[in-house]
Length: 380
Ligand code: FPP
Ligand code: MG
Image (cartoon, rainbow, N blue to C red; front, side, top):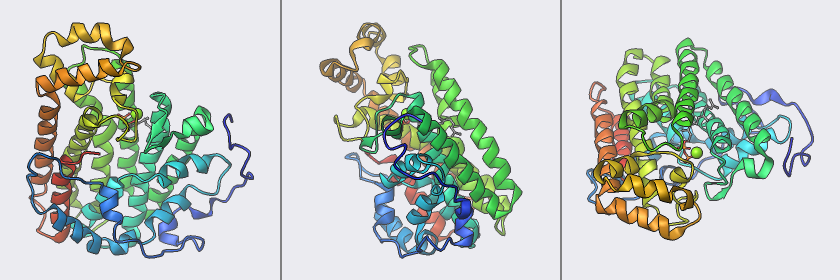
C-alpha cells in the first residue's frame, strides 16, 4: 500500500475484539467517561436566530445522566473495535475516531432503543458501535471519492496513508460494524443494515452522476441526502427497538431517524456556506469545490436568475479565488438562500420531533426531541 506509515506497525491478525461490547475485551478498560462527552459529542451551539426550543441545555444535562451506563468506555471500545489487523487498516479508522466527531449515530441508537423500552445495554452498545463504524467506513471511502484533503481539522487518512489504504481501511471498519450487529443475534438489525449499506452506495452513485451539474433539482438533492445520510440515521433509530420489548416502535422511530437525518445533512450543507473560512474543519465551500449542488445554492439559483450564468463563468476559479467565493456568498445572502435552507432544515427537524408522538413520554424521548431541535441550530 502506498503512503507513509504503512510499514510502521508489524503485520498481525488479532481478530479477538469482534463483538467486544458484549464480550468486553480485557484490553479495553471500561473506564468512566467524562461528563462533558455528550456536550462535546453533539457540538451544539445556539445559532444567532432565536432557538425554537429553550430547554436544549436541560435535555443535554439529561443525556449525561441517562446514557452513562451505555457510554462508559465507548470511545475506547470504538478504537479497539478497529484494532488488530494489518497496518495501516486500523490507523485509517483510528485517525478519524481520535479526531472527534459528533457521535450522533451511536447516541441515536442508545436513546431510541431506550425510548422503545430496550434497556439492555449489552444489546444497545454493539449496535451503537456499529452505527459509528459504518459512518467511519463511509468517510474513509467518501474522502477518496471527493479527493478531500481535510476532515475534522486534520489531513484526511487518504492524504496520510493513500487512497488504497483509505478504501481498504473503510472496508475493514465495515466488517467490524457487521461483526457488532451480528453479535446481537437478532435478524432485523442485520437485514436492515444490509439494505442501509445499499442505500449509502446508491446515494453516492447518484451524487457522482449529478456532480458538476447546475441543472440539479430539489428532488435530486433530496434523493441523494435520503440515501447517503438519512438511511443510516433511520437504521440507528430502529435498531434497538427491534431487539427490545416493543419492536412495533421501530416504525415511529424510523420516521424520526429518517427526518432527523435529512435535517442533519441539510444543516451540514448550510454550514458549508455559513462558516467563515477555516472554521468548519474542511476547506471553505468544500461542496462547491467538489461539484456538489446543495440546498443553499439550489435556492439561490431558484431565486436569482442571474446566478446561473455568473456561476457558469466563475465555477472554474472558485477553488482558488477568495474574492469570487465572497461574491457568491454575497449573492446568496442577497436572496436569503442560506437562511431559507436553514429554515427548511428546521422544519424537517420539527417533523422528526413530531414523529416521536406514538412513543410513551420518557426522559429518552424528551432527549431525542432536544437533539432534533438542537441539531437544527448547530453552527459547526
Ligand atoms: C459524506 O457526505 C458521505 C456520506 C454521508 C456517505 C458516503 C457513502 C459512501 C462513500 C458509499 C458507501 C460506503 C460504504 C462503506 C458502505 P459529504 O461528502 O457531503 O460530507 P463531507 O463534507 O463530510 O465529506
Ligand atoms: Mg465528502
